[in-house]
Length: 258
Image 1 (cartoon, rainbow, N blue to C red):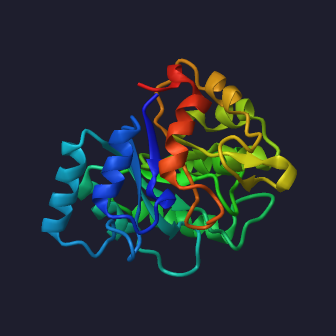
Image 2: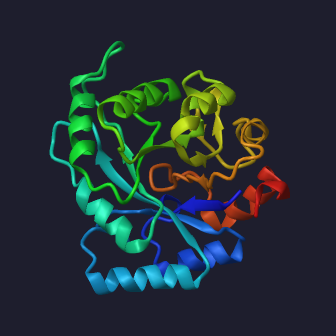
Image 3: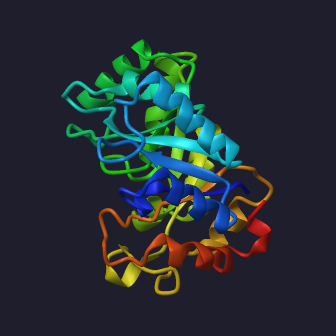
């Protein structure tokens, strides 16, 4: 598997530090957090985008995703197109978006999902939109139901699934169940350590009980990028990436890394 990490785990770090972390720890991919306080953001000039892409490619790294905070189902206008343009300029595999559906219902498409259909219909289709199992759609069942609706109503759409495996696991699905539901659209798999005894609180690699061996078994024989979403930005109690990345290799085992 191609192994990467999200820059959410090193908030505010300069590009040089991120490249050193990746190269020094045998990680080959990045999820770039897109925000005004990061080196990746939609305000970059064309020249800055070219330089950023060149620096990452010259380091031998792949951009798994531009991680936006676009809420695909939200009432408010969302900067989806700007993030898709940024991802295209950087050569990223796609743009991570969140569902963010305040109108989520148990049955049938919600008003938020109808808004998402409209946004997807009008969005450029040269860069995939990576819908994460998150917030209002934290289960694979919910995301798969929405993507099935998209397949029917927006033929040729570019929405794919970004499987946050810890989210689906924490919401009661087995990893095998989640994978089976998402597989037709799956593009990227995130993982992290969490402790189910502490309400699935993110914890250090050696302190949780996320079933990583089960995840690797489910993904055996596939080639999906596998990305560590280390949420240091939101959980400052976590150890830094410099300490965490070496531990990830032991946790996953050498067979998981190409």
